[in-house]
Length: 450
Image (cartoon, rainbow, N blue to C red):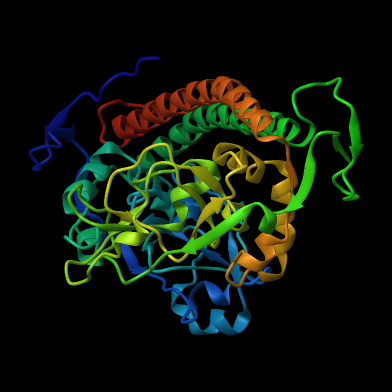
């Protein structure tokens, strides 16, 4: 679909913006705002989170498509009272101002219950509520994102301060035209978001099928005709006759935890030492970039360095779904250390390391993990070693473990390829979304009559 341009343009006065429609203005965001501020984290940190209560929004809940509340946490009314300066209102614009999600932004929707934000989220409240739809969309444009990329500061931490946010330049048409542009973009981005949602549903389905394949292989084996026996564990049912069922403490020699000093709030450079974050093994995949640089004043602890062949498990996370995520480290950069929120697990010699990881990523193990942390949810979402050692798992002969590992490598690769294709489709759709918003809010296309 092609769109016309405006009849007349003028220089914007901003070199890298170029021309804007003749009747538009360019203004700093602060000129339009009644408030620019952020929230804060409760004094007790994640220990104060509860299972229910008042919504507490973090940067992982803020997306360009809107608020994602699947892993939202809550705080008590008492904590809310201490954080009352960080309460959001319907129509506020929320902007992530630190970390990897810096620049993600969305509008607080109608009907959101009382909510607060933490210090990584900026609250932008406009003087004129009629402009919020247009301004919220403008904040997603390439034009504003480019300014954010330029403005982010600090060698110790990527981020924006309130003065920088206030100085972000926006292109401002008359209010009636803002309404027309916002309505057009709402329609068009909704279509794109629906296509993105379809791809996300496909990815969820692939994830479920992938886990089902893993779960069946590590609990029932690969031979459908194998004789079965009672496992002795009611909820586990029958297992192949040649297998045993054991508690984790019987198949693990040693479990280590690392060190969590006060680190620099950015990923380490290749030559620097770093401590991995709990998210480094999210959903069974090791992401070495999930780390924080160790300050030069602190000496690294060499025995905590992570090596290829290690098994790492997240023992604590802000999200209960990620506690117990386990990954086999095939390769890693040097100078990465364990944090105290990560277990490094050393299984007995008769346990194939990749088989052990597959077991911990199965539904049977996931259900045990969820039961173990249910009492701690909203507090620390912590998996104690004592609980983990008490889990039951299936133990085939070592040779059969390796056959299962090879089978799962082949089968999961197929799911991973399809998942990657779905993610590429999402990336292209999101690029189209951003490009359309950028063209409309900078006046490069005229959508008034669409």
